[in-house]
Image (tube, rainbow, N blue to C red; front, side):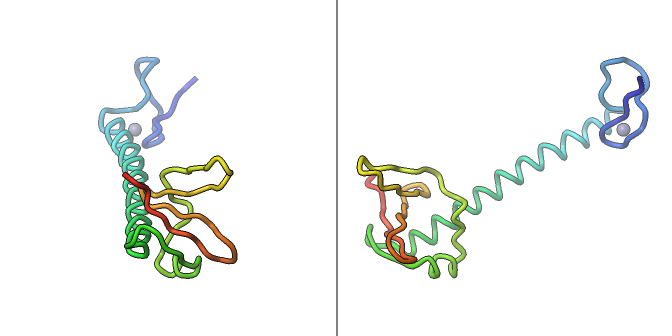
Length: 116
Ligand SMILES: [Zn+2]
């Protein structure tokens, strides 16, 4: 059975365990895969940083209230958090590092800063 190079699609000749047709193809394939995963990490970190800055800017006094519309207007992305904290009473706080939010009634959120 003939294998093909995952980078260029050429048929691979030579040793049976060869995965790529050439060193050049192996290198460019691996570089691309590594770059993609680094981009993913960088993009995620950027999103988290942005979320953190938004919460920090809206909550300078450790504790406040804001609306969902305000968060969204600032560019907050609810998909990016770093941890979830559930109190004994079952209240769930969502944290981006030490800045947290808690959905309250209506379209409002309580913002809290975790004690360090
Ligand atoms: Zn190739």
